Amino acid sequence: MNRTAHQRGRLALLLAGAIVAALPAAAAADETPIDPALPAPALPAGADCGSDSSPTWRTVPSPPPAGMTVSIGVPRSTVNGVTYQGVVHAWDVDGSQAADGSVSGQPVLVQSVYVPLPLADGHTYGWHASTYDGTAYSNPTEPCYFRVDGSAPLAPVVTNPDFPPVGSPGTPTKFAGQPTTFSFSSTGDPLPSGCAEAGAPDCQVSGLDHFEYALDQEPGTGAARVPADAGGNGSLTTALSWGVHTLYVVGVDVAGNRSQEPAAYTFTVPSQLPPPSQPTLNLTTPETAGRGAQLTVSGQLSAAPYSSGEVVHVLKSDLAHPTGVALPDAPLSADGTFRIADVPQVGGANTYTVTYPGDSTHQAVNASATVQVSRNATAVSITTNAPSYAYGATAKITAHLGTTYNGRTLAIYAQPYGGKKALIETGTVDSHGNLATTYELTRKTTFTAAFAGDYRYAPATAATTAPAHAKVSESLSGYYGSTHYGGLLYRVYHHTAKAKLNVTVTPNKAGQCVKFQIQRYYSDAWHTQSTSSCRTLSTTSTSYATLSLTNAVNSKFRIRAEYVHSSKDTGNLSTWGAWQYFTVRQ
Image (tube, rainbow, N blue to C red):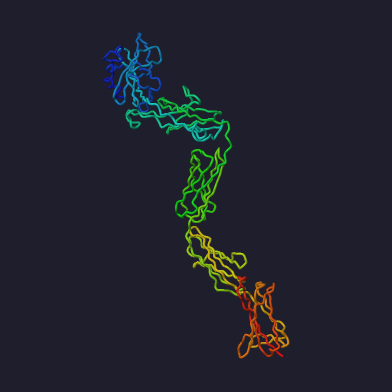
């Protein structure tokens, strides 16, 4: 209902009975006639006079009274002893009811006028005032508007991270004299009865305005206050003395209603904090897991309880991240337990390092656990270019690598019999997957090709063993000259001399066996004359054989030695030396 309607057509709703003793019935019905010369009442500023776009708020008791009271300044009589009356007209803006009230002028600045208009929670009301001199009315004042909130705010909730309430888990994290912050929150100002949402007609709510608080006693008149934000939250930062305290807090809405019961937060402030404890951190992980499948790392910190909001930090290292990559923090339960979920994308060792940074009652601690994440298998092979090798011969070794993901490097190692394994080649395989190198053999040697693995393929190795013959070095002694037959060198002996074949076997084969074989040339062919039994090699790996030549004049001979390895020598194969040629003369 607009303001003009109330100024010109409103009087049909006046309840004349409220002023019948002072006002004529006809005048009470329409507040006419109007004498513009009459001074209008004064409207002091206050909670009852807001604009139609910004009404003020007022509260009412429960149950609400049968009427309302407003304050006006009635003009004092100035001519011929006339006594003015103040007339107030009030209405519910929803158009449901209206009423009037009046008061005789007195020599005071402000007077209270009672209007028999019941006030309802959530409704909006308007009123204005006029002056009556017994025959006419002044022009009415500008309308005043106010809303009614008769419901008390809900009791606030008090929390504090440093001093847990008495009887709850947890221990104080601060001590006397240290600043701490209490947080207040309220779920709001209740709606009037029968209302589904605030702001609907006759469903106005003033809303939470501030919190009032007091320490160790309930807040009274003039209590300290903190403002409430739009979400119904407030906070208080203070330092406290040693002992058990109770902080009492009430919520107050814009209309002035206070929550019916104060929130009481009882807590203990220690004089000093105990030294932080040293917790232990245990991790539980599966030994193995599949790549790309979820795994869980669970943990337990001792020395519980832990405050709400605490976390552990997680760092994971793998082949792709050797220095580690941070995973999301894991929330820590009050009992010190936590869980970490991860889906590893890189195979091999995945190491999870968990760190608790510590708090006021717990020292920092960390622990690590490793999970072996599955990888695919690949083929590795290694070959040599011959089944066996002479002493000092050079072998060509070729290693081959099959399918991999992001690693194409092979390493080739050689381990001679009785020696140490050594790297002889490393590098990236060619487009055919091959890596080749060479190696000089002096004894049986095992060659190994090794693939270190990559993000998705597991390490692999292959080995092959290449046998090597011993070296048999020979020389004739006791001859007096040399000659050649058919391009071959012959040593010439006198028939009275003795031919001697000196033999050295490399590597040192002391204690092993060497045999000598002698052949004579006749009938256009070489014919074996004898093969000796084993002769033991000396500590310097040498031996010799001597031949008497008395009956060998004008004959051609050749002699050689054979190294014959026994089961005790697995480093080299048996080896014949080269033929040594000689002839005998008179």
